[in-house]
Length: 270
Ligand SMILES: NC(=O)c1ccc[n+]([C@@H]2O[C@H](COP(=O)([O-])OP(=O)(O)OC[C@H]3O[C@@H](n4cnc5c(N)ncnc54)[C@H](O)[C@@H]3O)[C@@H](O)[C@H]2O)c1
Image 1 (cartoon, protein in one colour):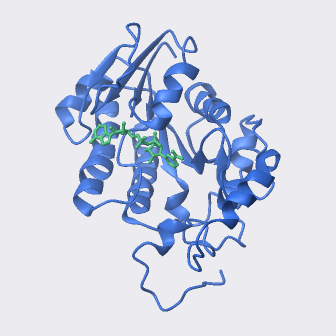
Image 2 (tube, protein in one colour):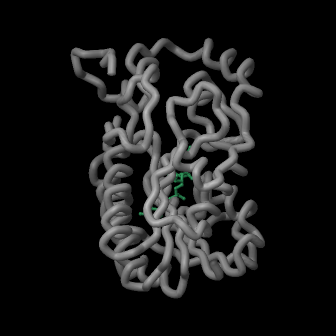
Image 3 (cartoon, helix red, strand yellow):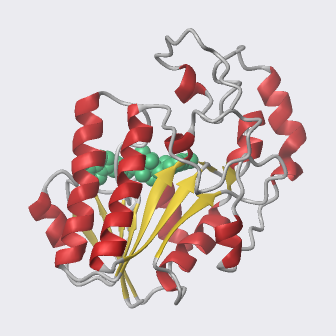
């Protein structure tokens, strides 16, 4: 990997990666709709709206690998999701194919499978069960990943990121936390491992209360270093201060499940 593009450079994860990926690849190009306020002189940047194919084509030109973080990162109105995440993701994959990009790491989300109950341990072969329009857009991105991998030979890794941060901050996040260093490890497997064709990994650290079987990532050598239980006391204390949420407390997707919820069936057993 000589030249890598990272989209979503101005976002929470992108801003951390601008420091953590420094020196890892010879050339890293950063892209976003917004110019990051703290962009350094030695960080090449291409402003691009993912909803514009011509702008995305300019952003991807000449790179070998892409880390696709850009998009609307929470629930939103349909038009927003449609432009940034559905059209945006299609433009990214299609522009990558045209430009003969070799690899993509796609930031998917736990919200693609948010409507599984917390008591059920799921793996990447369980069908998607999105908890929001946002979650549907991530399932769409995962479907594009499979199409472009099997039809066009792109090597694609989807990371179903749980919750990225320095520490898990409540009970749910003890199960889904992803440390910055562990995200870097997963991205590097996606961009560098010789055997990657098409994979879905859970973007999760070493979480004793995990909802997920992350065996596929372990098979590629992923060895998470972040231990959620080291932060359990603070996370559980913070959780005790949260308002009760019978729906969000039952399902893996938490508040994304209770938002707009109007089903009579609050607790699906499976
Ligand atoms: N942070 C997490 O814990 C988490 C969890 C699961 C998945 N993810 C996914 O990881 C990625 C990065 O997350 P984040 O927390 O940094 O999100 P973020 O919202 O902080 O950053 C997303 C970036 O995408 C950019 N963007 C939005 N619409 C765009 C468009 N039309 N064209 C170009 N850029 C656009 C925004 O300007 C923003 O800088 C997102 O795809 C998100 O869905 C994050």
